[in-house]
Length: 350
Ligand code: NAI
Image (cartoon, rainbow, N blue to C red; front, side):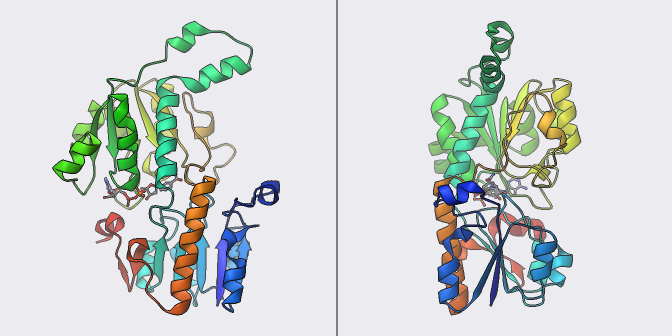
């Protein structure tokens, strides 16, 4: 069988840091394992024409959210041998899930592999925005000492109201990490937590339209599905509190691209951060690169060296099960046997 992995280019870092498993050069540390089982592993960086060339013969396609290979319906139709789509990481929206399910292609991701990594990134970006860190850092580098304008946009996080949209594995870890900052915390999710879970996390449930205008800071931690595509539309962004901050490490398409630029330019929102864009890699002239008051990074939050180890191990586990004809770990499954089975995705596809 042919296994095709579409991974980001590691460059010199691939040689210097062997733990950089998620790059094409190091191929998730899978080469020997796949070849020892008598299969072929092709690791490429080009999610365009080069991937297209492998579609007629690939049985398994591995992709990462950080450097996505968009497996559209049309591409799935051009992949007659395809039986398994694997995300090395969490979040499988780069695969057309409905099209994969129709073809009874199994879709799996490495659930939980990078949830701590992302939660830490969220906390860092919330603080970066609220404390006005990026402009303060740039002031120092540029030789300045402009306390006035820098302090004029700097706040304590303590006593602020934080909202978490999508209270799954990452959302709950964000809540646990923000609780010691003595904030008021609310969340919205399709699945409500138990009273005991809410009490441990210090977060109370609110319907989305009640939560949005109440919060000083909102963190988006829900998957991209037909139900969350542009969930933060122009209208919803305008309903956020004036001067609030929005952090989105979930998926770029959950926030309306142009409307976000507008609300930052006219001061309705005080800041935006996250690491997810659409499409990825973001074009050099993507408007989010140059909009005011942002603290964005490329899509790196879920690919720390520790996360890479965990998702590489998970990919190996899935491939071993697939090669042996054993079932893939249930928690990893997004689609199987013609159905979208993951509880985080399934309701949006009914
Ligand atoms: P999870 O499946 O544990 O939690 C997702 C939560 O979102 C679930 O509780 C689900 O009920 C909720 N949800 C689904 N649709 C919703 C809707 N319409 N409104 C409100 N809540 C909704 O997933 P996890 O591990 O917490 O990851 C969440 C998302 O974060 C992933 O799907 C992925 O898109 C993104 N992610 C980003 C990473 C990065 O590197 N920036 C890395 C890992 C995940």
